[in-house]
Length: 101
Image 1: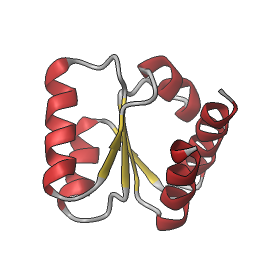
Image 2: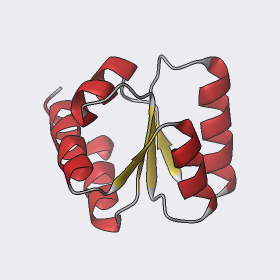
Image 3: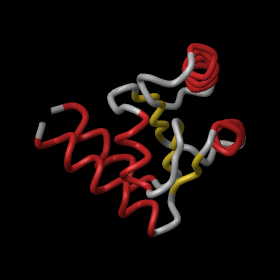
Image 4: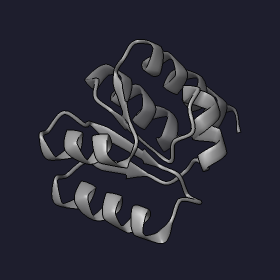
């Protein structure tokens, strides 16, 4: 549980540093143009949203995490969203370390 809290805090920091794209459309665009390094999709998002994001991430070789809920994501970034794309390499490496543990 401690790592999940660290992920959420780091996500808020990444948001303040403007290293994330929020929302389905912006996240998809950042995956397509190669800017997204990691995508968080809420585990309780709609079926179509989850399928769209996981398929797109898989085809562009971007890691897609379904570990967080929509409430957790929204609280971490300060606005109601179900999809967040991390566009910074340093942040994405740290997220992957925390998610792997």
